[in-house]
Image (tube, rainbow, N blue to C red; front, side, top):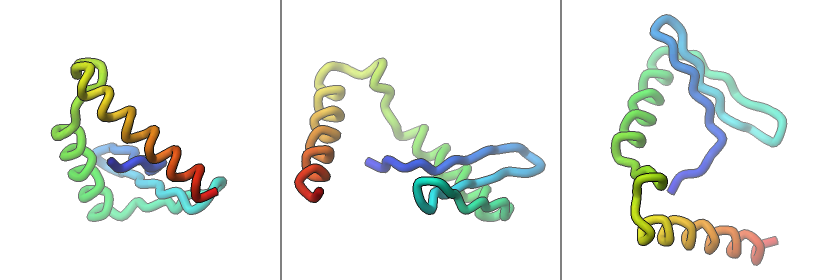
Length: 78
């Protein structure tokens, strides 16, 4: 599972990819090749993703239990 705050703005003429560097800043990338690869990556992720809204109870339980475990692990590290 990949959870991040990456932001991607797509427009056929000019796209922008924003990567978080810290709590208050982003690196802004408008390189055509990088933006095209990012667009392909996000499209691939969407095609291979399941909607929690339409999935069954079992899938939702697996998803949320994994999130809860990650939260607990982070709490332990703090």
